[in-house]
Length: 45
Image 1: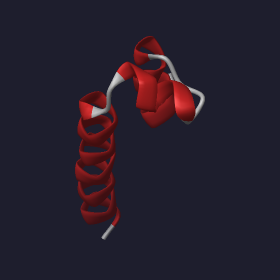
Image 2: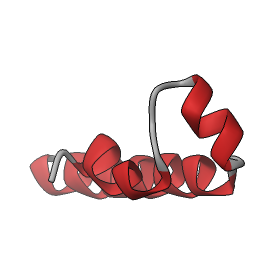
Image 3: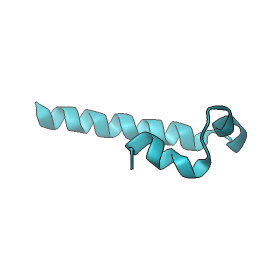
Image 4: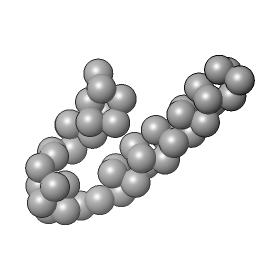
């Protein structure tokens, strides 16, 4: 079961990354992010 949860989390995080990456720089700024912050915001790294 733990493996399934990790797989689900992986796909959810990847989806979030893709969605944020598709936003314009202006839209990212509106939510308090810069393009270089996306990875840290999604993955916490």
